[in-house]
Image (cartoon, rainbow, N blue to C red; front, side, top):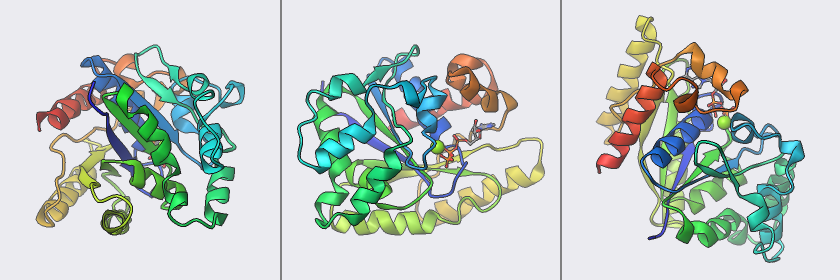
Length: 268
Ligand SMILES: Nc1ncnc2c1ncn2[C@@H]1O[C@H](COP(=O)(O)OP(=O)(O)OP(=O)(O)O)[C@@H](O)[C@H]1O
Ligand SMILES: [Mg+2]
């Protein structure tokens, strides 16, 4: 197996569908036969990817918090690694987070070594690259030091953005950060594209907003994925069921859109 491609799903705006997209994309790739690892990097104290996959963060033996802490303080993660990696019923592997992850962000913020503090997640991911085809990092809604760690570890970024409100307002800042990191810690980092989520096909506003985002970013030379993810009530319900939308409602429009997105992603 060649080395995994590492993809960060980012946007510092909250609630735009990052976690839902990370899971659906991961499950979609696993359905195609790829070996996929999802990493819950949400340090808001609400590890949603972990919960969306049906795990209770309080009951886990070890999480990303342990891996980050060990790595930050130069302890080997070899022993703890097998305890951290879970496999879910839909065939994806994942590293869960817990509500202590914000403590890691604080530790990183106060850490003196400016280079090392950006590369802690990267060191962990590097150890895993040989074992997977894709490693997908689910970002928290921020551009703090942990989010910088995601961008330092990633080969590419997919920016999830909702087709309403001002969820695209932070995209410029995110792209600036990518460009800055490309000049410093991660020369190979690229923005793979913008994924427009939660399009409400019943409202002209949502469709118009999706078209506006598409035109604006295409004009700037950025790729906007042709596949847009529609909004559907079933997608709001699947986290409670601990299932991806691909399992919860496999023939529904959101699952179909994510499967189409996987095809579009794999085309090039
Ligand atoms: N296509 C969709 N249709 C309807 N609801 C959706 C859809 N995608 C996601 N949701 C719901 O919207 C909410 C926000 O989605 P999600 O948690 O994936 O966003 P996020 O960007 O990861 O949020 P955060 O920034 O808080 O991490 C969740 O309750 C989710 O179930
Ligand atoms: Mg999330």
